[in-house]
Length: 291
Image 1: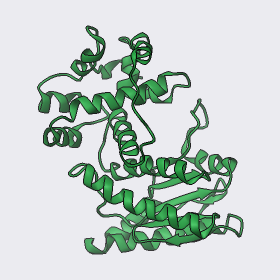
Image 2 (image 1 turned 45 degrees about the vertical axis):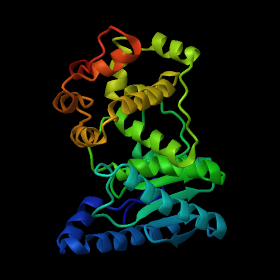
Image 3 (image 1 turned 90 degrees about the horizontal axis):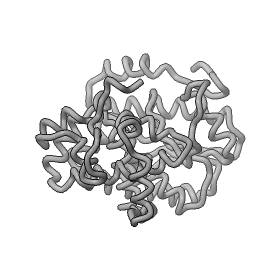
Image 4 (image 1 turned 180 degrees about the vertical axis):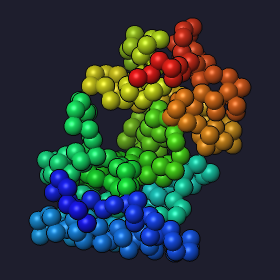
């Protein structure tokens, strides 16, 4: 495997061709084989304290204590079942090998590893953990206490179980933060009069397009946190009939923020959801305005 930016970077497209030449029922086993070979290569580029632990559905590479890894693995296993149950018909865990989790002992090592997956230019907000969907999707975290690790794990695992869908970012993050709060109680949704005023001041016909396109989530000002909240409110407003909502989620596309799916399954524009919060305005997604 070629080593780039200090770590093995497999050609996952070529590996996929090898795996998919075999009968479909063997694909998870094939992916597990190649993921373990990759992680064995990663271990050669890390200090000796790092080791690989395995549970029913997860491979965890970490330098932390056996107790920490065991507790984290158990949490992942419980959360996997909870998310698949809560998002029945939307989330999926079919066809892949085990989920891979990399827990780095230092922030610098964490950012060094994941920098390979980001452009060289631009500003990027700090993160407590990331699901990297490119290639063989995997989680990367810096070391953190167990409460924070659990909240981050629930959030990122939700992303992993939705990666088969071309979701708009507002819906993807809405799911992730909602499940994080449902599992851990760590992300209460606040909307008192003061916070509502902050939303009303920030959102207008221009910034709402950043929300629909997803670019607002990467803002380095309050626009990022406001986007996470607004996404959850939109999700909540649409999910009152779960069967309809599940059909919408399976059809929603990042290309138009889910507008066509909203028209099909709700009979109206997503702009109507924003109208409920902030009144009249040009709130509908306008993909032709996006960069």
